[in-house]
Length: 556
View 1: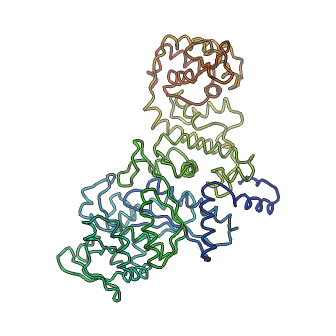
View 2: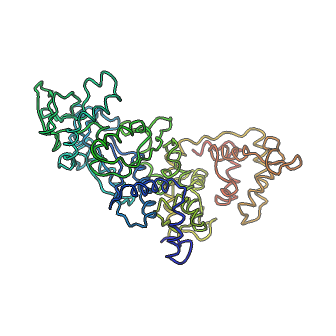
View 3: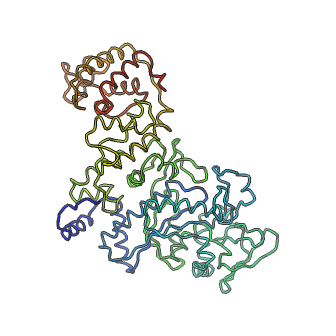
């Protein structure tokens, strides 16, 4: 099911959409307009979007991010061009790269030591299962998720492209333009590296390893290179047919030239090399694609996430605790800002997704085209009612110390009208994610603290005030009681709050943080009145009594 357009006339709606798309400020439209301008300079019948993947380790979310973000640009381009120009998205795996080090997160690192420097598709698979190689396993892990999410893409293996001859023409051209490529590359290298550098990496006929060795000769006419193999014997091999691969910088440019790539995004760590990629592409007869450089993803310690280290989140880990849509939102937001990619970002991403989705039906086209859900769902966000936030579900689980979905549904059925797993399947899905997240990350980190004398007095007063509420009190009624209890207490007064006065001071956030820390063992949470409404006034009063009796830590 999709939402109705801003106008009920489909043709008028399409015209209105295109008009706003021309000036939309969302970054996918900004990038798509660059491709439109490119086509005006160099018309062609098909536009190729590409993403690159290095399968040196299990795929991480940054890899997914490139595909998701590129898909958003592709869709914006299709809207701008009324889908009159064919587009393709090619996910290219650099699986012919040599395994330069053994990843930290493989089961038996010692077993892989004999295969160092061999192409990833020649390294045995250490993970078990019916996979031909380490590279094949990691490629499959990536494709499995992309297929699950429903991306429209084609997968390409460097091993296949090199060995099948799909890159032969550009490799022969690279042999012809060897001196020009070296003239680009050598100034980017240190003196010692310059002495041994070659854009061609031979695959040793003796050992099967990818060799970083100087070349003795390049015969452009014959299409061959000569080098000293690991056995000490000079060998002459063709540059075609998978006998060599290109160094990674020339490989970038050569692939762009060979395939006619029009758009590719990459991380900031590639930014300084982009001019090198562009020059080599042009030397080999191509036109460099439009680029988009995004900031890097960081782990909980602020370090760049790495496939080989296995730090940060994996795709499967995110999907254990939240939906693909929430992950896509995280990728959409501020791609040019460094972002921490750890478990604690998940709840906010989930709630923001549903918040954006709730706003969409009431927005005009200008606002819709800036709403992330339009880009996440390729212009057709679902109509969806989410009456309870993910954070609220986590707080309910925390208050009741439960990992049982039925317990959470018990609270929801009592206090949220008209909801059930049948009527709200997405809410049911969210309940399942919440109990898993609570088990893994909330429960192990809960730390209750005992109330001091001021806090004891405030909690006793709150218990009395809650007891005086009528049945069916709303979240606003409860929130008013919370403010009224705290307002006379100097510790919680905020004279700088909007509308505050000496006679009627505001209430500081410290009061609400105290409630979460003492009653739930959490640092902070959402609007406490809303929590109490769903959790229940009697149940909240029971929490207060247990906290006053010093029994909260025993609940863990």
